[in-house]
Image (cartoon, rainbow, N blue to C red):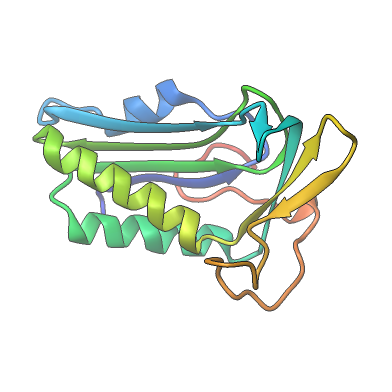
Length: 168
């Protein structure tokens, strides 16, 4: 894995924005772009009370590939990316992408590229729980724009951490 990749992980534990920023900081870094995705309180005009994220066993490998491609395609110095799995409440952080570069333009472009690629390619699915008591799966294989993964979502026991993570 390129030295530019400082962290790639999937975790059941809360994510740290401060840790991501620290990982991509340095004396040569002139700009840090940051994306923090949080659980919002509504979708499709319906109140959301919580989410459950589930991953495919290949998710951390696919996420690593996304980070490596971003490093190859953009003039960046450092990348940190981590996605949460498990049960999340409204306001919880679901994903953090941090990019360090010499200049802001490349940091911003790489950050947008990585979050968009992650959303399109990494096999992580969410089940939204609505205030009405109903729930809805989002991002399952076969849904429009989602990767075609040939297996069902795994329970949380399948969650694992990736490179640079201090979580088991």
